[in-house]
Image 1 (spheres, helix red, strand yellow):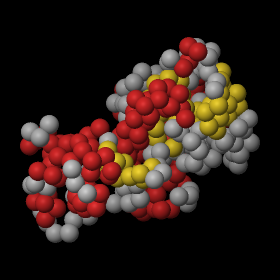
Image 2 (spheres, rainbow, N blue to C red):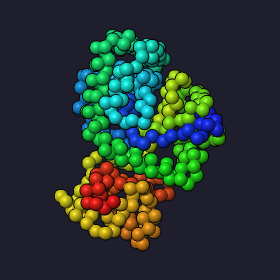
Image 3 (cartoon, rainbow, N blue to C red):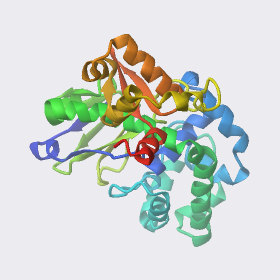
Length: 330
């Protein structure tokens, strides 16, 4: 069980990340890639990515076992930035004491079946060649496994962010923290979650960054060292088929269908996230008509629909947003 203890100051310092963190997605996705869990969510992605893997990713395999401890230095606080170059540079500037601490913890992990390879031991000593190889491995894996899907990963995270934003606008921070059920359970002043070990995280006025992750499976993740800036990485619920290319009934047919006032209005309205019922009410159309229009937009890859309880929340994808901006609709 994980218990995150809030003070009054911490409630005022809760932050929701603006987008996917490239390092958390690298770490979480590498572990997802090695397993077979959640085949409906990640089967398409695994089948696409596994043939691309190169031997250069062997260092990451040593640092990121499928389960258990993950070195904290691989996911540093980026100060709100989601730029890959800056993220990797921050990792490579990790102090030698932190490298040695984290890799010693990894080597002693009870789930580890074999010793760390010599390259990881060189990394623990902060040797420049080992750091350069780590940087190349992070960039290479991101290029092979995540970059081709990044706009879709971002769209899934944006959909979750729209949901959380609505909770904040309706009920403030208390509503935001309550919106994570059943993955997170808000019992003021403690946020609880299932966790592989018993852990008490006391924020002590430092606040908390809530970081959504497409590749975080089932339960949240946090850093092991208690002195690091507090972050809670939580799993989002991706739409099934998110890793498949958007389907099209015929070349250009769905895009041509968008040339209509109702669908253009829907695409513009879902920039901030709307349910089917809200779209029907705001546009003065029936729920069935709203569902039909959103289905066309979704097949064209311009809109993302995610079920949340009894409702389906629609948000615009990066491609849809580009279309809006290009046609002057917003």
